[in-house]
Image (tube, rainbow, N blue to C red; front, side):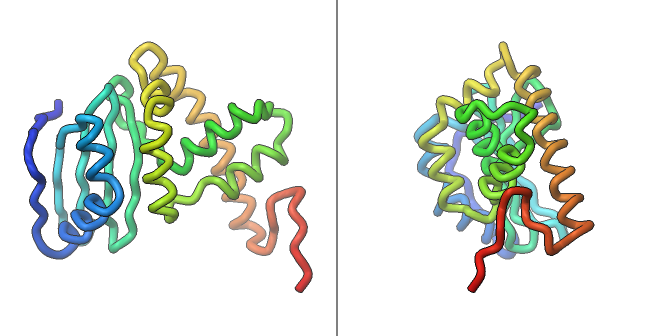
Length: 180
């Protein structure tokens, strides 16, 4: 259960301060403008800090883990499932380009090159400009189906990552290295 609080968020020192700076730079204006409310704020020894916002049937979680920032979205209807904004970007690109599960090469390229959790500014901009579409993805009528589809795509991404771990020099299929 979420305890919604409408207030200005204050941040302490250390991990929490870094999280506050990240939030203010990339997400504060958007989340406030859309009417999201603070649901949870935690700081833990060694883990960093996190804040969770709730609104429009969605949860937005921002984590500072040793000065690496992760922003993920979940549904209030399907608890415990979090999806990185960059991953959602990949999901929509695959849908928009109508890339079937049979075309593994194109899907792998999209997952490999679109999904980038470290691209903070572009991910924040994507969230802001595609908010209505993201909100629809987590709408209570389709949240469970969306979660199933996102899980299937995450399984694909895991396979590609495993392949990369087994052969670090390998490029995604269909990509040729440029000669210098």
